[in-house]
Length: 109
Length: 113
Image 1 (spheres, each protein chain N blue to C red):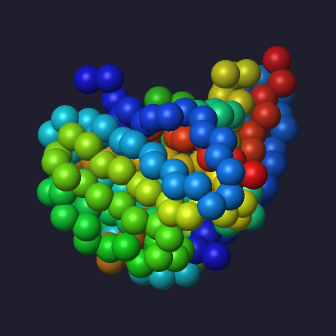
Image 2: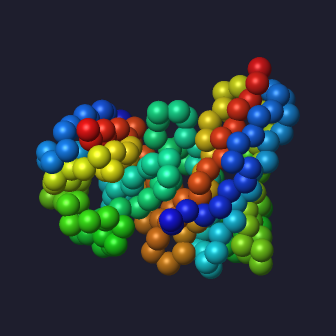
């Protein structure tokens, strides 16, 4: 399998809580991205962090990257029911992007 | 722009039949990617094009799979003959700058019976 690893596989939280998802990879990378997928739909790009960056913010999203540990995390603050979706990390090394297995987030209203 | 457009959205076919999936990338995007998504293997890159030229097809599972990009606004992924294990959701995506922000189509859900 080409997949990177993500945890948890599934996460259920209450609206208003924060959600944290983690991604680990095995190669050196140029960048790491996070995507969101609603059921039955295509993936939507959320944020990209380059290998020389450690943290990036976009609205309620915060991404961190630790290249020494080959890991990244996605934090969604003040979650909403509309955030319910699957979230994938995708890391690029050389000329290939490998997607993680995804975390299914369920936000209860 | 309407985004990446894929057709058909759903395809049900019998084993042994030829299947053709179609994709129209976002205008001006030089990169086009074909992915396959299954529960078992997740999202896999099958092939990608740069300026209509296939660059890496190492993800194409077998010779039964072929992809073409005759011009900047159209690409096809063909499976001939199709097998039940080809059942999956196939996504087309395009990007402006290689392996950065990719825009995905809605996908084609293929069922081979």
